[in-house]
Image (cartoon, rainbow, N blue to C red; front, side):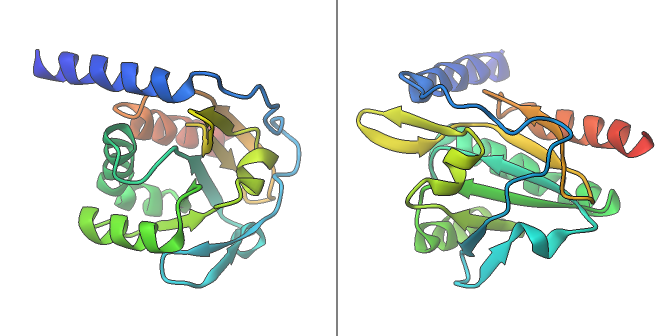
Length: 177
């Protein structure tokens, strides 16, 4: 019962964040994923091309330290070994600063990279920007990128509680084809 209640609350919070979302077009399946170079929580630069030859789960989320974003990150962390076994890398992107990501990773014990997109440029390239009370935030969208650097799967308006399991299932199916 508590899980149902918690899921309902997270859903409402997600809807609130998505209010007045900008309608942007996400990259299409089969097309090249837009390349980027962003700063990580440790201050280094990461580019999508650094992961050519690997599966990439690129997820966009609104804000560090919020309930739905924390749940989503914890679930990716919980399943990290399964992603590694599948040969996939997880990269999270929000408009938060690299320092915010560093603090968030430390607090939540996250061992995958969170990327700072403070000007929302990369979020916009992926059709993943929303306006929340006059502030640009990343919309909760995820992209599976294949080893050739192409978009293999697009998720929009994801539900944080069950998202990681769905991505793992879909990743396994994509790897078969």
